[in-house]
Amino acid sequence: MSYTVTLQPSGHTLTVGEGETVLDAALRQGIVIPYSCRGGNCGSCAGKVLSGSIDYPRGRPAGLNAADEAAGQAFLCQAQPTSDLTVAVRELKAGADIPPRKLPCRVVKIENLAHDVRRLYLKTPATHRLQFLAGQYIDILLKDGRRRGFSIANAPHDDELLELHIRLVEGGHFTGFVFNELKEQALLRLEGPLGQFYLREDSPRPILMMAGGTGFAPLKGMLEHAFHLGIERPIHLFWGYGLGATCIWTNCPKHGHGNTPTSTTPRSCPSPPPTIPGTASRGSYTKPCCERIRTSACSTCI
Image 1 (cartoon, rainbow, N blue to C red):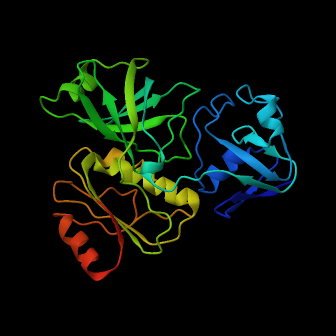
Image 2 (image 1 turned 135 degrees about the horizontal axis):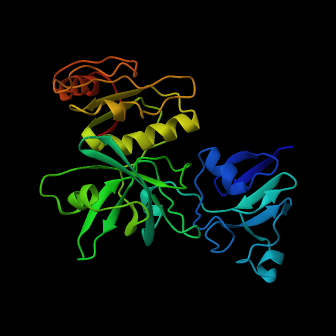
C-alpha cells in the first residue's frame, strides 16, 4: 500500500511505497530535502508532522528524543507513513542551500577508463553521506594544504559512493600520485559539495551540454539524474575526446527507454564509438555546439 505525503510550505506531493521512508521516496522522485547520516543519528532530515501518522520499524531513531517526538518532530530518513501525511520540511533548490563539509573518505575502487584516465570511487563514513546536486564538485584536501577540485560523476540519488574521473596531467602533483601511488582502501579528505554548476530541473527549455575529455564527468551525473527523474526535455550532448576514450563512452548513461543524447566527436578520435547512437562527426566540437546555441533556446551546461 502506498501513501501520499505533502511537503509544506512548497506544497509538493510524493508517493511513498510500502516499507519506504519519506526521504527515500523524496529522492526517488527528485525532491531534495536535507540529510546526512541516513541512519537516524544526526537530525539533518528532521521535519514536523502536521497531520497523519508515521512509524519507525526499527524503533525511535537514536538522535530523536521523546520530547521532540511528542511535539511532532520526525526523522524522515527513518519515518515510514502509516497514513497520508503532511510534513513541514525545508527543501533544497540551489547549490548554496547545501553547506560544504570536510569529511574523510576511503578509496574503495580504482578503474582505468583510458591510458590517461582513472575512475575513483570514494566512500564517506556511513553516518556522514555527502549530499550534493547533480553537476557539483568536491575538493580533495592534500596534506600540504593544497587542494584539487574534481566534479562528481554520479547522480544524487546514487550517493553511496562518489565517482571521480581523473586525467593524468604531466607534472601534476596529485594526478601523478593517483596514477603511481594511490591504492584501494587508502584514506583521503574532501570538502564539498561546491559550485553553482548543476542541473536546473525547473526550466522548460532543451538542454545543451558541451564538454571535452574528463569534463564529461559532471554532465554524466546530470544525465543520470535527468533520466532518473524522467525529464523529457531534449538533451544535446557535444563531447570532444581523443584516442583511448572509447571505453568511457561505454559508461555513457542511458535513458530508461534506451535513448541517449545526440553527440559529436572531434578529429582526434580515430572513429566514433559504435555503441552510442546519435550524430557523430570529426573536427572541432565547438562549431556545431555554437551553431546549436545560435539556433535554439537551450539551457546550456559547459
